[in-house]
Image (tube, rainbow over all chains, first blue to last red; front, top):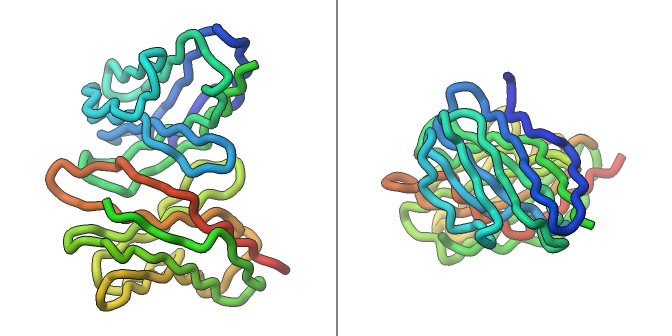
Amino acid sequence: GAGVSQSPRYKVAKRGQDVALRCDPISGHVSLFWYQQALGQGPEFLTYFQNEAQLDKSGLPSDRFFAERPEGSVSTLKIQRTQQEDSAVYLCASSRTGFSEKLFFGSGTQLSVL
Amino acid sequence: DAKTTQPPSMDCAEGRAANLPCNHSTISGNEYVYWYRQIHSQGPQYIIHGLKNNETNEMASLIITEDRKSSTLILPHATLRDTAVYYCIVRGAGGTSYGKLTFGQGTILTVHP
């Protein structure tokens, strides 16, 4: 596709529920990133993939957060046993190479945990 | 990565130039200055980046001072669609560097009719 696509656009979950957020990066892009953006704040880095390899997961806030990119294209961010503090916009970005700061972002998934 | 300081908000009249400042006094020699913006309900959008020379593209111009301790993003003819949060980011490049960007709070630019 022309840009980074994320689904769903909005997700409402009950506390304790598991959720899965999907990201379709730009075709052929090597690198994929997940960011979390709380209301009124700038995005914060969660994790980074180069092809199918997860090279950095230092930003994942707890072991309830898990990300995968098994075939080096589509990625899924999974959050287990969601908590209210997980409510945020989750942004996915991709870049053409493994050494670029020119990222292309999707519009994000807004997660609300009730 | 060097820390950046930006004003929390700025206003600009439509059709006039918008000049957004950024202070990065602790920048080191191999760090680039990047600018992104985020329009409401969208993901951040790359605008421009530079090392020490001034840069211009179809979106904006980036002026970096000679000592590299500050920079200014210039939108030459602001439109209502330029209303957004603008982020100045300093990041090293090369080696194992990749897009692990630190966004900070940014500057909310409001363009008025």
